[in-house]
Length: 114
Length: 113
Image (cartoon, rainbow over all chains, first blue to last red; front, side, top):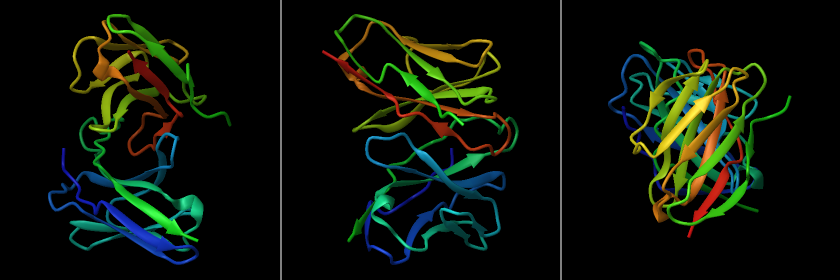
């Protein structure tokens, strides 16, 4: 499985934007970039995913580098509820790619200061 | 709509015993996958079932097994429990189609004494 590299932790102030980086230099053409987050005492929660173009949804934005070797999850206005571990995951949707096997790394722990 | 339901939420077993965990997916979802989460190893994929067939398997010993029923509900079983099996076991359901997001339950926390 292609691997991702994330910083161990980041801090943000409430109501400020947060940019969470992810490097995936060995990404293949059939890998989608997925982000999940895990709040304390909960299961992971889907945040966003993309292939080549930048993506926006109600939770966040995903900016993907032109060479696809890195991406950035953007939380536009951090709240205390956004404090969680954020996982950047490559998901192969090539042959047989509808499977649910996700390879989680250690993720990045986001702390939000009031 | 109702989310993914896992039972039991907490359980304590002793070494050598076996345990069965249950997962009810979101209505209409045909894929159920299982993950183990420990502080040391993080989240690790166990296996996935789709339409009652195992579609993928992670790198776990044969003591870990699972099945899926015709209503998409799934169970996983761990036999001959070891101390290292203490973990949070998470179930996720999805439509099972390309790119479909996974919806996770809150997990079953197993403690092996």
